[in-house]
Amino acid sequence: MCRNSLHELLRADAQRARRLGFGGKLCIHPRQVAVVNACFTPSADEVAWARGVVDADAGAGGAAVAVDGKMVDRPVVLRAQSILADVAVRQE
Image (cartoon, rainbow, N blue to C red):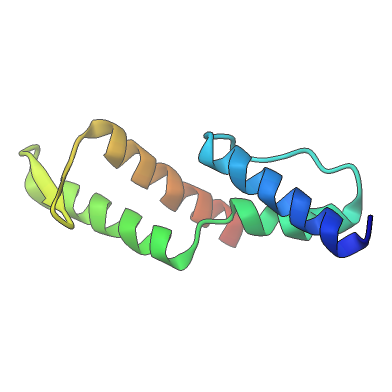
């Protein structure tokens, strides 16, 4: 199997793991690190969404709030906070 095919399989596996809620993936070779890091790094759209959710929640003063037409409850706020914390750690 060629290297590109292996990287695509690794990318697909890492993306699936992230969708399932995993926060990372074990790498057994240094060439895998960049691919895996890219898959687990929040995208600019995810960061913008998370900031919007956290800001809306903070401005709501404990009241119910909607972001992009969707109601935001505690698990959604926690997920947004987790994304922003992940970004902060990666920027250190």
